[in-house]
Amino acid sequence: MKHISILIPRGHTSLVNIVGTHQIFNQVNGILSEMGRKPVFEVHLVGLEKETRQTSGLFAVSPDTLLHEVKKTDLIIIPAIHDDLETSKEPNKAFIPWIIQQYKEGAEVASLCVGAFLLTSTGLLNGKKCATHWMHANDFRVQFPEVDLVDEKIMTEEDGIYTSGGAYAFLNLLLHLIEKHAGREVAIIASKAFSIDIDRNSQSAFIIFEGQKDHEDEKVIRTQKFIEDHYEDTIRVDDLADQFAISRRTLERRFKKATSNTITEYIQRVKVEAAKKSLESSRKNINEVMYDVGYSDTKSFRNLFRRITGLTPVEYRDKYNKEAIAL
Image 1 (cartoon, rainbow, N blue to C red):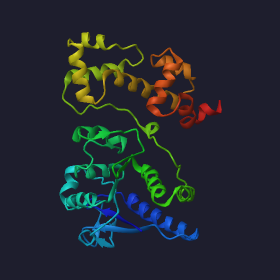
Image 2: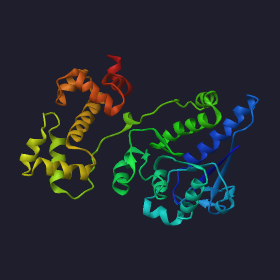
Image 3: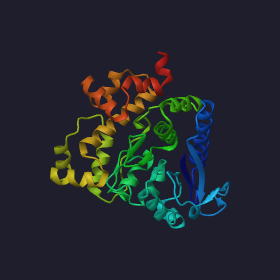
């Protein structure tokens, strides 16, 4: 059996991650029993004390096992911690060497949503791909430039380390782990039992692009504002450089450093974000929306939109705009 250690960190933790993971893994054991097969998972809540009170003041979790009692585990689950990194790191520092040691001894490690911030503190994600909640992507990139953040992904898997994207994306990671350790048939049954869309691999359609503005490069901020105020126009990098009296090469270098996007990428994402809002709320057809954000080539616009959102403009409109569907 696979020994599962669901960590119970101190602070304000995602109880949904904890309870959901505990319930689903145990339910899989029930499914296997009904199939005449042996259970696969031995699930434990692992904490630093017998009762871990949430800093929200509303709940407490009672781990069945203390950290020092777990000599060997097969899979570590790190739930999301809603406190900021500096606030949560000190009270949970005992988990760090334990996670590292267990990984060295063969355990797999999975972080859920912003649990990636705690996992990154172990150094095990350095040089690896990582998913987390898209709303925290900018902060994550600033704090951990050595990690390859792929904020559009529902999950990542590399060298026995797993990460999941925002909020309930952890359910898709759980199905992936169930399939790996209990088989595809069981994962499909679990997906149906819990109404989870199996094999979903992107959270791009949920991302709201706001741009990275938490920096102090004034010329880059002015460039960002100009792009956002004139997204309906054709914007050229050379023209931006001339307008702000800076060489193109210097502007591109500073822009990439400050925002984690190239200028061209930023222009494209601002235009697509404007298109998304129009598709969500207006009755304009796709071509009208395309022209409004400064594109005239239907194929080019469709390909760009799909690359950024994971959906075609028509699919996006049909997903989020009920009034447009009724037309």
